[in-house]
Length: 329
Image (spheres, rainbow, N blue to C red):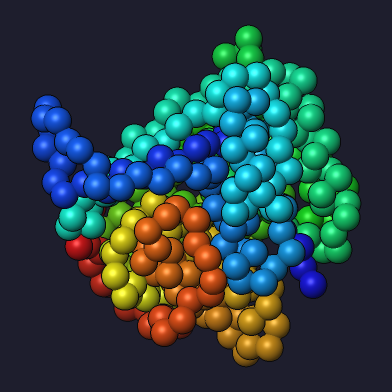
């Protein structure tokens, strides 16, 4: 069985408040509050585990929160790299209409010693698995005292040592760095806005997205899975494009949906696709279903597999289809 190791170099505590209504500049009493260890790679590992996969989440956490992390539901998955102080807190506020307002804390810098410990943890986890995937998720911190992001060269070297395939889900300066040198990246998962920035032009149609994805693929990436928000997602290779969309039974919390979709794609690609005549379509369908499954969860972390959710898949999509403007459903 394929194993999956996720890297979260900037771990987080997810704090979720549920309110009746959110009005700027006023006092609001929350109806409920939850707190859980998160970070994108942790979320991916949680979904992979829910899907029955062998996975471990290498995550950097502040020492103040390690005891809390080791008492949570994801504790068996975590391979904690401990650093001084508290873990950053990412806050979601969900109102009665299901709209999510999210504020993420800044990513703290990481010492050279902590980054070395992170690489060592990755090496150990990858070495214990056969034909693994390494999933690099979320923000990358600055290397303390340098003013630059931690380098991914060491991560790629560890992946090569273990024969691991590499998936990347990041944004901002970290995504820019990957796009500038995508060697060794088998799977990249930008959203439409990030893909637009990568090619320097607006993407108004499905065909625009596919063309942009292929420009990224031409730089050396194997597959691009682009999230299109309310419109679904499209999985693109050099010669194939598959559109998939699934409706959530209820919208409870949109945080973590992209992480679950990435896990779903990997589950579909490595398991369901093995017996499929159309592996890219099987993986895209799985991604859409897991994403919808996550949206229906009150928490950021998903549990169990999707039930009763079936994706609509188009292996020959209409490339003239106009995308829903951002912010509209």
